[in-house]
Structures are given as C-alpha cells and as structure tokens.
Length: 193
Image 1 (tube, rainbow, N blue to C red):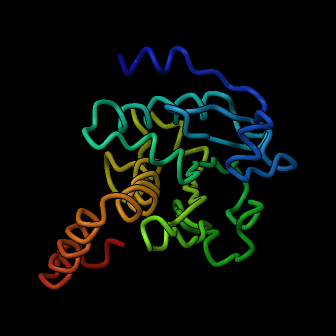
Image 2 (image 1 turned 180 degrees about the vertical axis):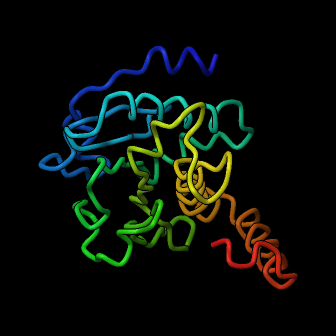
Image 3 (image 1 turned 45 degrees about the horizontal axis):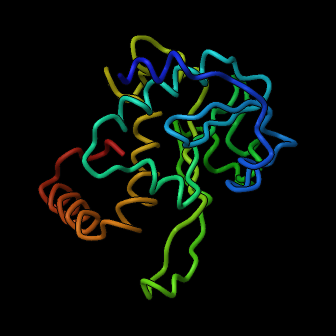
C-alpha cells in the first residue's frame, strides 16, 4: 500500500494552485512531488530521484498513523524542501541567515496566525529542509550523526510537531515537551543536539 504511493509519485513543475496555497517561490523552486498531498519542492539542480525517495520516506512515516496527520499538514500549509548539492540553506528563498549553513537539516520559516474559532495561535507554512545528499542515501537517508539516522525524517518530525501536534493535538505536544525536559534533566543524549 505505502509502496504503491511511491510508484504513483512523479516529479513535475510546481502547479500554480499548489504554489499559491503553500506560498512556494516558483522563481526558485522548479521541481515538485507530493507525499499524501504534502509538497516536496526543490530547485532544478536537485535530482528527481531525491524527490521521489523523499516521497517514499514521508509516505512510510504517514502510512497508517491513527492521527491522520496529512490533512492537518495540508491545512496548515506545511512542506518539505530539498537543498541541492553544493548549496547552503542561506541560498534558499525563505532563509537569509548564514548561521544555519552547516546544519544537517532545518525546520523553520512558518508564522503564527490568530484563530478566532479556537481562540489560539496556529502555526502555518512550516518548512522542513534536508540536503539532497541525505535524501539519496540508501536504504534510508543516513547522516553523520549516527547510523540509521535520517535528517529528512528528523526535520519532517519537527514540521509534524509544530504543524500538527502544537496546532491540533496540544496535549501530545505538552507530553513530548515534558519527556524531552525530563530526559535533558537526566543528562540523556548530552551533546547530541
């Protein structure tokens, strides 16, 4: 089932309606694929294979989850972007600071809007960035931070946390924050982040 979603994926130019809805700069982003309706965008320098591999990984993350995250990610206009080999995060239209250029990945650039119905702030347009080299490694993207670690999945998790858990499932977000703080207090994963 999840593998069929990868086979059906294709790389195209960014559709106008998608560019408008998700605030995608089509002067920079020329390639587009989607995982369950969530855009994955890249410049023309990024290989199609990197986008298709990212679709497969994101579909596996989203497949069968009981929270039905994809509709929420679409509602809050979340997306992923792939940085071409030899380029830096500061080359991307959303990022002006060079301070992130040596990071393995990045999740940023969303903004808050007041929601009258829920009487709370909601985060929109969150973008997760990964490098093309990370997206292409087999069998899943791996990174120098450790065997089996995937920056694509890591940054996508930040996007899910900020776009879905904080906006829709705030109790889960609070539990995650509590568990993270408890782990830090115990000294777990010291220096890992």
